[in-house]
Length: 358
Image (tube, rainbow, N blue to C red; front, side, top):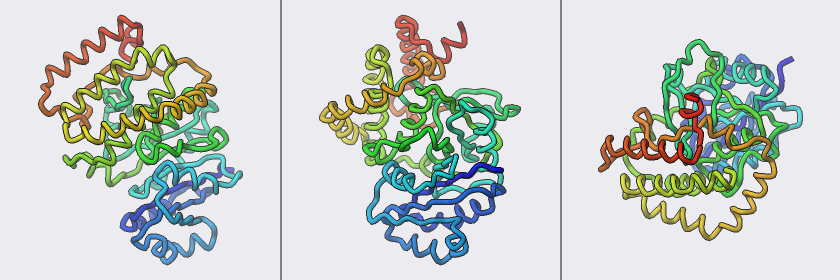
């Protein structure tokens, strides 16, 4: 018998995405699943639209709708929806509303999770990102995505350091609450991924599970600095580093965190105000962050060394399209990478490049 899966989808004024998303989802070849839609206080008639257009699935309890009176954010919304997942569900999937999944998407992700008891989470392949054409992502020491080349065509799974929250399947019994409510939005998927890895579990991408993530390409093309994204993204990414690294490694990596922030704000000066707000939040909440760190570290089963060897020392990589060089030349950033490499060698920080060469 297929294991039961609950798919959680958040929505905030995304009525224009819902028909495409749910039409595709209910065409899934996987049969033993239900869907929880958490509406984050939408004002565009999303809930009414769903009740009218998906009445059949509400009637047979394939779809449940929870309407929040206010926007709880990505972290808070998923946490609220998670409270309503029944004990019958072995797996939970977090899925963005601006997606269109393939018919085999859910079957393929569940199949990979069922193959390995130590596999805690499985991601899927976004058709808008060419991971399956030899390009893959890891994370650098300061929490930014770094791309590298790897032949993935013949592999059923790819080990990873982090799964994107736009399609993230995990084993329910391993997770009391998916996210920290203080994150609101951005880097919360890194939080959950790191938590599972720190406890000794593996994360994988299913190379035959595909979906389209429509707004991803729009964000990539946009040149406008989103102050909301910068504030929460900076705050949450740095908080992850503070709470997850062992203290000795945090001390070693702290200069790289400072260097990264200096460079990104020089390259994109429009970020400075939002970045400063994020730094101030981190400073005035050091006590709260310390408590979070104590809670997280108590769950640790493996050392940082096992996780760092999957990360990259590089601050900048040519394949990483997110990074805009601005006034800094490629040669300067290449030099920065070289200096960081020397720094990592001197302090015995063995990233994926150094680990694989030994």
